[in-house]
Length: 213
Image 1 (spheres, rainbow, N blue to C red):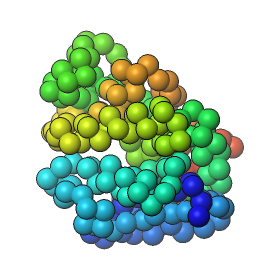
Image 2: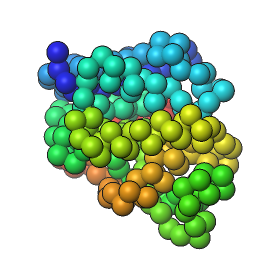
Image 3: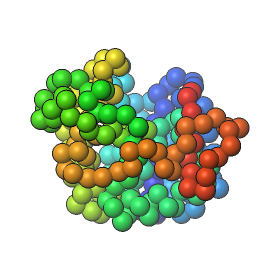
């Protein structure tokens, strides 16, 4: 069994199920030696419904992979798919203990007061925000385990929940956690391109495309 896995989950909405299938197909030629764990519906991982606890299913799906024995785990949303081999991302996960890319915006614009207060972050400070559609953790490393443990705590504390007007759920929490531990990531995407299927790939570094469903 590989110790590396890509993990994703689709709720029963047919658009997300189609996205999960697209992701799975894209990995066939781009994930040699890396397993894919694709789940359909929150019940598949024992998660609360998305409507009841926003994006809690990500934590539960990753935990499911941990329980199965995987130690290097890359979460990808169903809107993401591979356009090149994913090995370099797992090499980064192994070396750094994690892998995140920036969303190009600031946490303070997309985090509710409850969460900012929980993480003791000043609402006037500029804290870069990660994009939680793609997150990597190395559970052989102390740092990888630490970051994910804190994300689980945020989920169990109900901090994922909030209005889309000023909160980005798991993304807001993960950004605050990374900030508080002083870890770094690219503020702008490097390996992910927000683009459609037929859009030209920007450069040779791009490994994933991300598009709406």
